[in-house]
Length: 184
Figure (cartoon, rainbow, N blue to C red):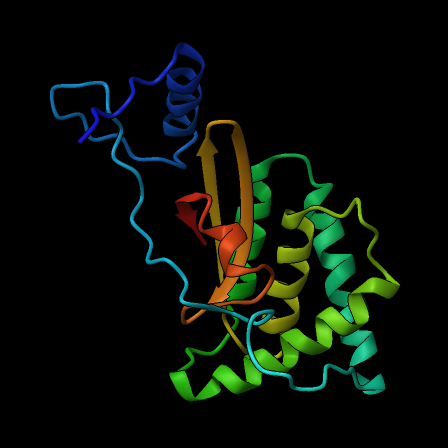
């Protein structure tokens, strides 16, 4: 077994920044290693699943547009912490859900993704898409998890939405490249 490579100065600096912002929690065990947030890997994706027809219902369009407007306002609010606070507020108004609502969540997420190409561009980032879908589900009384992950080499950050191990905004292979550091 090969020894784990030492973190470079930039990686350690970024890790310290995340600790100061409260995104990571550092536990030092006599080395410079930072123990990362533990989050189970998703086991399936909405995009990898069945061949169910994806469609949206016209009566849901106002709710989708409202969620996209709320996500846009959150993204342009300035501080990342403000976005987290808004997302937590949306989730706090949701019902606690059980496994039997997975089909409802999947149907609403499919509706959202069917409508999204009419509003989103290829420039819309994972953060905006995740926030919009999180708001859309929360407005319907459902609660999903907004997960953040990083990859060190080459460095990249990504976020996605999950519900009970079901990826709602990404594919399983893409997300498995990232180590989760936080979930809202």
